[in-house]
Image (cartoon, rainbow, N blue to C red; front, side, top):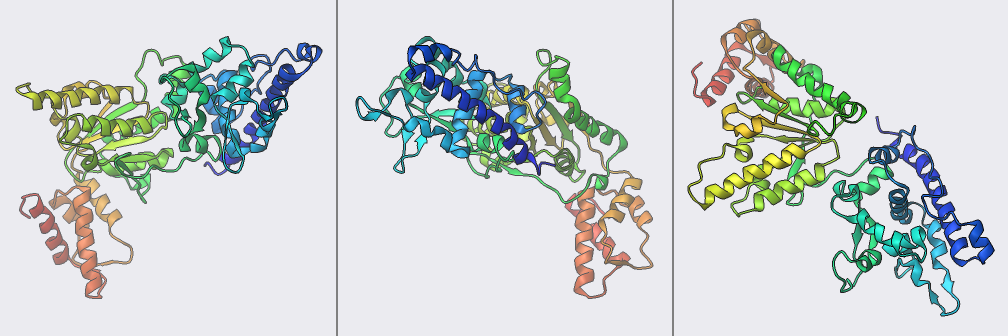
Length: 462
């Protein structure tokens, strides 16, 4: 449960804000104070003022810092970006005016809106870290490179001021002029602990996959269920294996699984239940918004999904994965070459994804062999046995319906080889019929007609 996530974050942020106030006080005393006072407060670098120890804290904010072994400089940047949202009064000191020139201190940087509210920029961070010294300022650029965890976690970035100055991209001046901007996800993680779900669209072509069913409703072959439960073991112990046991340099991040088998055997339901029992978000990738006839667009669309899902612990579910992860063909023309490039791109992205990626297909052989070598699990979902079909019939029929005396579910389960999806479709049809004739009774004839319809869909005879 995450009901107290906000309270945990708040308690740890209060400690962090108190530390920030000490850094500001020391910096101002050294920068503006008389020489004797400056010597007294010489330890103004964030590295010289001990940040609060959050080693035992359980907040999402503290876990984020521990996961990346955040330095005092990184913590200071993060706190500075949080203050306008959480405790803007701690920034009031930056409204101090230069009496000599009757203007704001240039050293403080910052952006001021029409209401006079102060938003920190890179220059604000540089002043706190370095005062007027140059060398520490140069180190600030590394915080905002693409490889830094601020960027990889889509947490903190530099937002150019309006109007954007004509500065060379990546230059120190450009860094100092930009606003320290937290993403919506970053702000939620550090405050309430619950980020808003992304909306389905071109920017995020995936939709939440949920279920009202429980794990006990899952009816699978024992061997299939055992392999699915191995994914739960990864969720429970994967982080300890990678970091606590030092296996991160040796193993790929995340977990990849292929679910294959006939339609209606529970592949999608299993993915949804894995999210439910582990407390993880599950997103089903919408292939209609991903696959594009234009060169390079499919890769871009998939990149948006992987970029937003990285470091979130989400489960990404690719139904009918053949459309994206199908076999590469012999290169005969430009179309084949670009299609093969798409597969190569997906290989790279799925291999570096640190969440759980589940691909579902009716046929295992339709998936490119290069993907198969990268799966931690390849799980077959067979047609349920007669015993499992009987369990599915009993679980699917509502308690409000009455079975006629001539209905023998054991006989029906034995005679008709149906998957769980087909059984649910048949139950839907007979229940609607029982409601329509006001009898609330399900007869043998009605069941057989519904079963015959399902078999006909598959090209089989009753």
